[in-house]
Amino acid sequence: MGSLVVAFLTYSEMVILVILFGLFVAVFSVTFFALQRSAKEKQWKWFAVVLVSWILGVGWVFSLIYLLGPGRKPRWSMIYWGEQTGGSRDVF
Image 1 (tube, rainbow, N blue to C red):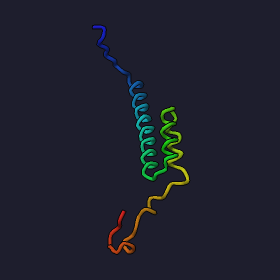
Image 2: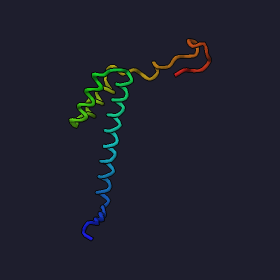
Image 3: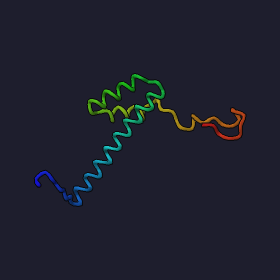
Image 4: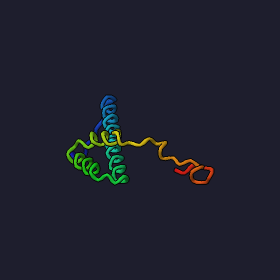
């Protein structure tokens, strides 16, 4: 009977857990998207920096620096309009 533990959380403890879970998801997604973008753009030095810093526990810092840094392209510059491709619709 001693091995079964039932935890009843108070409202404030649940709020703290939800906030911590949200922070965990945010940190994980920022790191994942930084790794994905650096691999897609073949920037292997940034990939290594984000991966090693993630192993050391500060990967989200370098991920944010990479994702928000000066090498970022605006989303609209990736659009090729129909006049250039010969069609009437946009090609993304």
